Image (tube, rainbow, N blue to C red; front, side, top):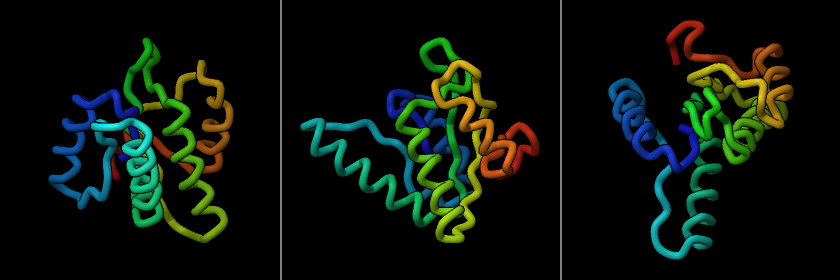
Length: 128
């Protein structure tokens, strides 16, 4: 699962839902202790889990008053998964909870990826 770590309540709720049907490898966790060492470990562990996954669930809910918000960190994680799929013939299914807002700096790129079928949205078929 990819999401802004500040969405702790939503992450834990979706973690419970997903664990009913899936083996959840990794989800964003609140950092404790010294920030940079914690950030480095979380960042590294999260990217390693993306390499191992079959499905990358993007928990893009409202944040900063923007419905379907995807922050720069999550955009990078999506881009990493797309890159693995395109260059290493991985088959990671990338599923966003909500559609992409038009107001993000990288909205156009995400919409290209949607058009190409590289990412899809849960509300289209409610599947994972």
